[in-house]
Figure (spheres, rainbow, N blue to C red):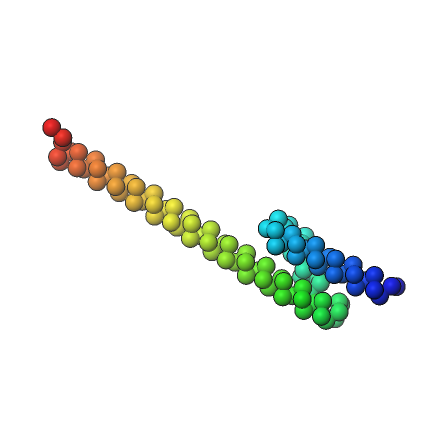
Length: 100
């Protein structure tokens, strides 16, 4: 086996997955590649450590995105409640103090 070609192929696999992730256009297979390459003992340690670092960054970004989507949902629910309350107040004012 050509060791140089082996390393180049591994780096290309890592590079491709990282480019897709950086562009925000990644699929589960890209994350799977990162976690596969992070297997110490199976791949060269320097490559496994780099893949593990990128994998951890991906996990943290996904966690932040998930939390932000939860916050957006909470804000939308609060907005809907405020709008309903505001409409109720307007209707109550119209009943109490009709414009004459």
